[in-house]
Image 1 (cartoon, rainbow, N blue to C red):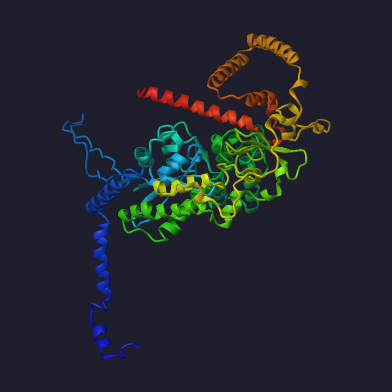
Image 2: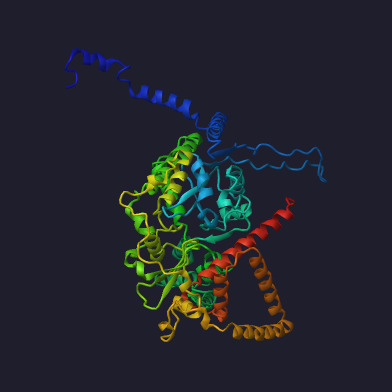
Length: 615
């Protein structure tokens, strides 16, 4: 009990042993000033420059780097002129725009994500938040998707969210990124796709930074803004009509093809509910000009891997506020910099190591291991090409439908690339990795450990093996790839369009059944007809010229295999008139289109650099 002994009263009165609240507050303020500097002013930026300099020196061999542009107030400065106007008066002083404070950060872990995660080249997400300190400083996070969740690629801290400030921050971020950033795409090229919410300043700045990237709009934010407009009292939309109009908007967003989108839009304009609100028709008309940004049907040939929202970046911002900042505002920019370079780095390091050590939580395991993948047996999977890692998987529900899975690219024609049970089943039974699946082999887990720890990670791959894991492929016999021909019946089975007579055929039919001479004669007849059409129509001539140029380029570069060429020829005419067979995506059509998009991006980059005099 307190004060039982005589010495207790002496200790209780001694401020060295029992300081007062004011003593604790004064000691804390002194410690905070020594460690973090003042809350504002020149001394703050001097302290921040010292912190960034020491950070760069400590991480110069690990890929970590940061840069700072100090805030400069130019509101009082002006361009004075000694001349006078025609009226004999001096011209008014011109105000200069203040230089906003900007910090660009790329930590060692972010640098390794750039160089080792394939999705950083395909698609990134950009989102921002504020109210992280008393000065309402804005923070932008670039991230990409992965089988274990979102991973950061870079952070920008700015004093405001104007377009010029964001552009300045992105330009500064380019200088701190690694040489082979965006999976060797480079800082000038940037990623293929960027997903954002509907912020004009942010999207314009991203377009200036990476002009050849495809800027997509998050479908959730598009519909959310639409719903907010309908609930705005100034627009006077009745409660009963709001549900009808938002349903129409959702139908436009999730149209299956461009023709259906156009039909639905024309129907919307004449809709009896919509015609009561001309302002809403005008509102949707403005968004109609940007339909390629929010309509899902225009993403058919983009490798979005099922990501039509920026949920990865939204989750990253929530992690930042709840776990990194603990829902507490930072004291100043120095402390904010410390949270990003230390606390945030530690969080994602532990997250990667949890996957490398096979200790993921149940939610991530279920999402990225594929729901119901255990229902797909080994016997229902056929290995078509072991080198390219292409497999054919029987559908669980439809008897005559098969899905083509390319584990090399991480895509399946059931849903065009997002995590699915077919990819998970192939990874489980054949022990092959994919960008959409949680690593199941020691080498792929070691890659995650290297991203988390760099050179400090254990380099023995056997260390990452599970104690209950069998690293050998199932002992069941593998179907030889030469027995699975890419004939018409095989592709009909894949698309679920084969007739009952064709379904009786198997995949081991030999090539001797095809008469090559008849095919050659048929080609000559087609060429004769094509020559006639070329002379009669300039449209046919232009299309044929494009086909010849692409064919020669792809053949000369060795990027067009016989299997891909055969599938491309076989699917010719299937999409004429806008029809889509069985609503499935042709896997090789996606592969070819993806490679053509990459080539077009390279051509555009070369043209842009040439115009700027850099080539």
